[in-house]
Length: 231
Ligand SMILES: C[S@@+](CC[C@H](N)C(=O)[O-])C[C@H]1O[C@@H](n2cnc3c(N)ncnc32)[C@H](O)[C@@H]1O
Ligand SMILES: Nc1nc2[nH]cc(C(=O)O)c2c(=O)[nH]1
Ligand code: SF4
Ligand SMILES: [Mg+2]
Image (tube, rainbow, N blue to C red; front, side, top):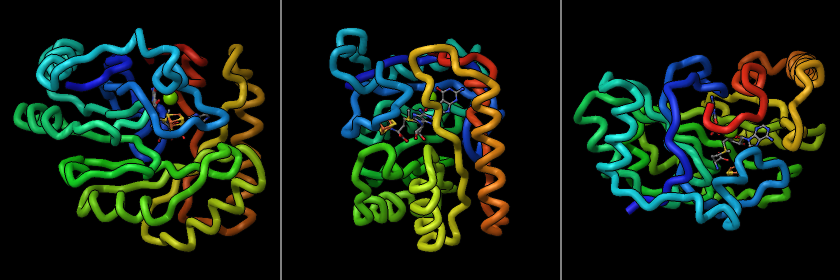
């Protein structure tokens, strides 16, 4: 059985390599991390666990199917940390019906079924998160993903994060790298002006460093819908 925080969509992927792509989200409940700026605490903090549902893979897929009107769509697995649960059955059921699967995870936990994904976004946590980066676990995640399309997405809150991202960039030169400004206004409606300034600063820094193979993207869903849940 799977522990699910929410299933929603269709919406668009608001971040990273697949930005703008129509998708249904399956958000699992529970995370082995607790990032200082996590924008999804309702799927992390155990105080919300009464809101999480225990569902079979078949039930989850049926809800996805209902949301997409039975038409195959990209399914994005997120959380919490979706890698802490066995999602292979869900992926198997969906793929048999033509659905594609992407997943967002931090790289702290991995499993052989990563190889079943069509796209894997690895989002290792920079110093501002206050979480520790475990390179051995990260490399195991890469190894498990095998020939899956992989991209790196790093949240940047300050200069230390940017330096850290630079180190990772040089260690993994073949992985497409996406940098995303950190939304620090989680308790109120984020100011679009501030988000724009953060994004512009990040663009300046990336260009200044000559990182011409790195992409800078804001969280499109935050521009469109603020901190609303389920979008
Ligand atoms: C909520 S997490 C869930 C999946 C997984 N636990 C992870 O961190 O990759 C999805 C993405 O949102 C990013 N994120 C979380 N809080 C954020 C914030 N305040 N501003 C920008 N991105 C954030 C994470 O870094 C991650 O890339
Ligand atoms: N539209 C939209 N795009 C997203 N990309 C990553 C998200 C996440 O919370 O994992 C997310 C989300 O919650 N909504
Ligand atoms: S790893 Fe992801 S879900 Fe978990 S606390 Fe950090 S940002 Fe939130
Ligand atoms: Mg989010």
